[in-house]
Image 1 (cartoon, helix red, strand yellow):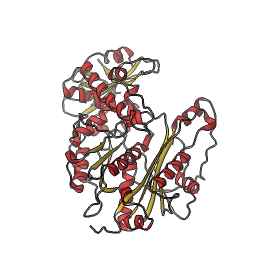
Image 2 (tube, helix red, strand yellow):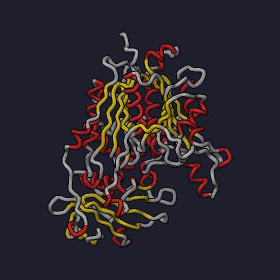
Image 3 (tube, one colour):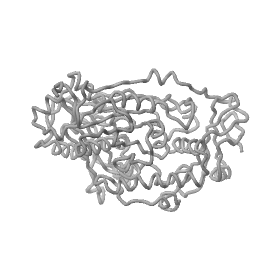
Length: 493
């Protein structure tokens, strides 16, 4: 088979984690990226980083360099190359691969280095020790090109009520899923414990995982000093672990460049297809907390473009910031959770370096596809509150029609939405459809948040800072319970 010389291909992958003993031997994010790129170059069989015409970095949450790709390019000895950074969101590494594949196919780019890293463990250690890090920052006017478009994901009313954190929203998805499944609280916690125990066992065999000690279901579900409740029903071990220092990198180029560089064919893995899309921007307007139609449409389209079904994909990595994300993604994609659905051990155990986790998943799947050249791999990357989705299908065998891509947003935008009632319009009786209880660092129930449905089908938010109410909502099933809402969204039980 003669390949189009513009066919995009991944030729090198690298991962790096650093367990510093103190601030003195810690590494900044760009240093982690540099080591990841050098590992990717060695993986491709190169003597050093190749001459790239684009250096593309995933948005960093911890240290704000202003122009991280410039600092990375300088460390790698690269000049006169495009400098670019993604928008924020856990979808961005896969979205960056999709964009780069399109740029290579069109001739806009010949070879690109993609990388991302977080040194959040060190960043937070410095804050606790009241130490000012001497890591570099670019001039305020020295900024890279942005790849991607920002998406406003918080309704003004959500911001007004302080409902702005993933640790608040994903537990609400979970209670909605639990009610739909018809499980008791105890039965569902056991279900989540088994799901997450399996995830920890995957991490145990991953040399690049941050936590490699497998956990039993009981360890994961049992609340205690080292596993305090964060947002009910999630104790700490069910949350993404951002307390890591780790990076990853990919080297992407055209087939023509790969051949010119003499990179062995057994290192080549092809992005076969990709899609990018998002749910309705605001959680307030979602039709239900128990389904994610954009994952269904975007994932199906990526599979169709690659010419495979989900059952024909051997290697799958579902985004795993919280258990509800995995269950929503699996249901939408048709993935049986009895099979292995993570290749790394996920964000709680392999590590959750904020926006960059999917680059670790992609690097892992690329390595596995080289060993299983007849198989396909699928990565689902997610940002926001199960909001932004990017999909990639990979294979060691080349596509017959080049890289396939779609952005099925218009179809998603036409799906049903709920109106949000605010103020006096929301006052009165409503039924809880999803809820969570936020806990203090002393492991005490502190406040309750509930998404409610009014008799006319509109959604309204309810909150309570009454600790007695918060404690009560940790006992038994509260989905379907009627409450009274005041105009200021105070929820009375």
